[in-house]
View (tube, rainbow, N blue to C red):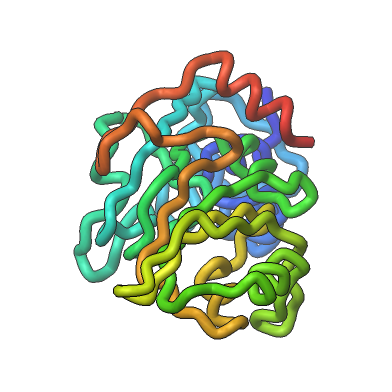
Length: 238
């Protein structure tokens, strides 16, 4: 027997805090009866939230690393019918992306049905490293690089210190390639960080997430993580 809130959180439906809210509102049913906080369930119980059946995978977790292509939605489904990252993975499990990459952003994206690991990787306290390569308009100056390194104000908050390195620049096209490493995950954060110092991002690629890189994966390709890689991810989070 396991706590209902843990089972639902591990399914990836929502965080434990959100699950408790849903239970309190009477939106969670177990075998057709309204669930209560602290309730325990087994693998034979049928759990539904607003008519959607929640799968208890009993620890049968899968982990995929995808090299996300441009023009793909980072979501389980899209109301406009556009292709999502889920459509690229051949699996019968109910997986979901760990965090988000913008529609036009490419690169490393982890997908899993392990809700516990997902919540830990996304929690700000764990400072999970994300490395991006940004192609920006303009030749970035050392002064502006230092501003980003020290943190800039976006959306009424100041970003944490980041590692920033100019990889190359092209005066004829007036563009720069910049490596940036952050430990946060706010909406459009990297793009907004460059915009805060006067540069537009033309192209953005996430080279690695939590130490997982996509060097050996072509755009749209994916692979399963090894047991050693999964264990390493768990060792990184609290």
